[in-house]
Amino acid sequence: MEFRQLGRSGLKVPVLSLGTGTFGGKGGMFSAWGTTDVAEATRLVDICLDAGLNMFDSADVYSGGAAEEILGAAIKGRRDRVLISTKGTFRSGEGANDVGSSRFHLIQAVEGSLRRLGTDYIDIYQLHGFDATTPVEETLQTLDDLVRAGKIRYIGVSNFSGWHLMKSLAVSDRYRWSRYVAHQAYYSLIGRDYEWELMPLGLDQGVGAIVWSPLGWGRLTGKIRRGQPRPETSRLNSQVVVDMGPQVDEEYLFKVVDALDEVAKETGKTVPQVALNWLLQRPTVSSIIIGARNEEQLRQNLAAVSWNLTKEQVAKLDAASARPKAYPYWHQRGFAERNPPPV
Image (tube, rainbow, N blue to C red; front, top):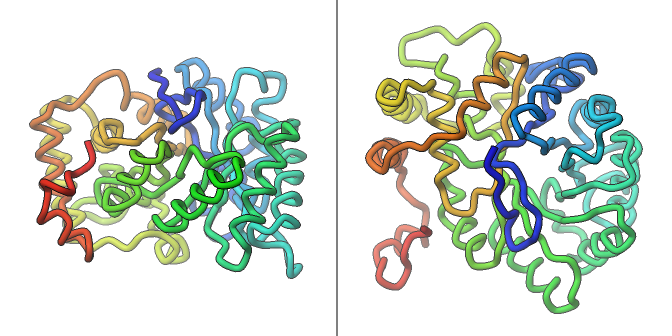
């Protein structure tokens, strides 16, 4: 397993990490993702560690906290062998302060995650989303306090826009508080908006991408093709899940899948393996979060590493997945001499 620096930090993370969104299966959305119990999770962790994958990602809202509890049970007795990444900010209760990135809620959220995970520290703690109702200074000072207390080792964000992230980094620099080194962002062959602003920002500011939903919200599994019925076990069979995730035009999806099929035949790999490998060759990507309902899916995803697509194959996928850019990015690309694309 290859390891990469996480942004501008000294921490090295595996290029693949295991997401725990399938752990627990509580609630309409998460039950559609998977219903992995402690025994199954323990087996998946075993396979990951054997393959050199030692980072596991969760969040306090996954199955109402059950995902963190199951992960904690699955790694019990081997905490020193793993990296734990989890998230907070989203609503975790009915109270007025049970949501957001205030000092009150972040301390409450971190303490809850530590308890459920059965650990006294979190390796990477990320804000699950931006809280525009809390001063950035309050949020960052709280996170810095938690780092100094030894409860968090590195901090990151998820789903921030460029100005959210840049403002936060500037405030951290001003007060010499702990700095975000990771951005857990949606990025896939059918969702390339990350490249427009967040990727150049990550390169400039030393923020590594931890990619979520690298298979386009379950659309790049190789099982969804033009003129074929959707598989019975797809998360896309749940309207709740579809509405919560990125929207993708079907004709565009099929065009990308056609290109993936061509490259898969050339390489002897599967469609998901090709889609994941493409991401691993993109700038700023430190780790890709893979999911698995079962052992077979996990082993398939693990086989996306230890080989590389050729430049020609990458170019073919780039061309098939290219989309018109929003303003001002299309204008900036027209002046590539002064605004070169990220490399």
